[in-house]
Length: 424
Image (tube, rainbow, N blue to C red; front, side, top):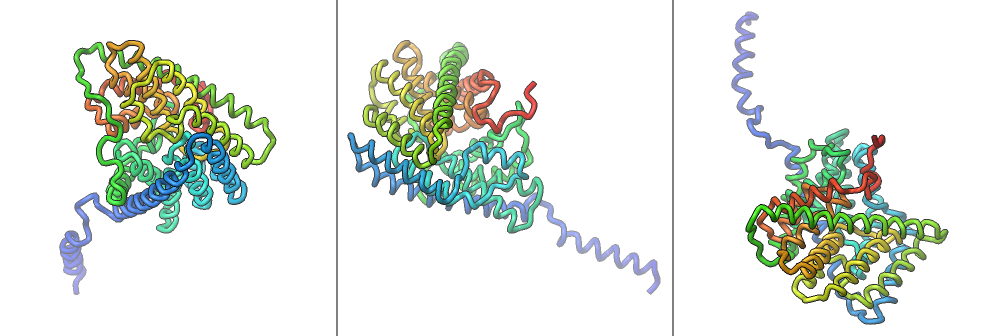
């Protein structure tokens, strides 16, 4: 065959082959990988929540003075687990591994995190299950990336997508959960790992569906605020004022946490003794103020539907801050996002009690947004999460409050691994 004819034949074969070998869509193997991770995340979150609910109902049997020894024993057991199996670390470790360890989250920490956090959250500690879920599902992303031999940014993106799937499952907010997994890793005022946003979206959506099928949590608002109608643009100014008040409370929480951290740091005792002491303190607080027990998932609605005096609300606010601080610093495991929302809701109710003309829903949601954004530096995801969790249809006041809390945050962040290497 002549060379010219051979070239024509090769050309025609290539043209005929293009419709078969060329995929005209963005749909690819990566999509299936992100979806698979989301399915894993939904199942893990569903099983974790079922076990957590079972343990919570069993331990809730202990009431009155019995709550003190019950929480002390649970704290002791959690400390023994950490001492024997290994320290699973906290949110700082997750952020550090994503930023400085090529996005690798070690699955070997999962048994210790799962067992200790189940005891801590179920017994009534002022920390929620979001941090354990984020660590476990994030490390699942790392493991899946290793199985499929992903490296560099691809593996880091899969770890972040895993984190998003765990956070989304609990809150039922795929968009908010995805943005949170990126914002919590932020560098100064920028979201660093924006390339992971689509993997996080896909994994979150699949995780949400699976988790909802398993236990139906997160379908619709979980905190029922009274209906709110925006009457004037002055409400934006009120949102900023409420956010300023919440930022002051956020600073108090940060200082309180550092105070207890220094105390526990000076105690040269094993971790299980620290968790035992933490359990005793938490049990005493829960005995006198039962609403401060647990992480606030159901307790926020209890706050909203009951009439509490200003004095009682102030006591709840102060001792809830102390409870969260002790829980965080004594070695108990869990996340502090929902507890911070509880503190914000309490402050909003206090403002409404002092100034009855203030709309209660606006005060509550703005305080919730500001205090969380001030502590975690996540204004975008906080805004979307609260709009989803409360059904608050007016998006902009929440955003104003979140941004106010964010820009009034301490220069040195509460999550120390968010700090820039060089602070100007």
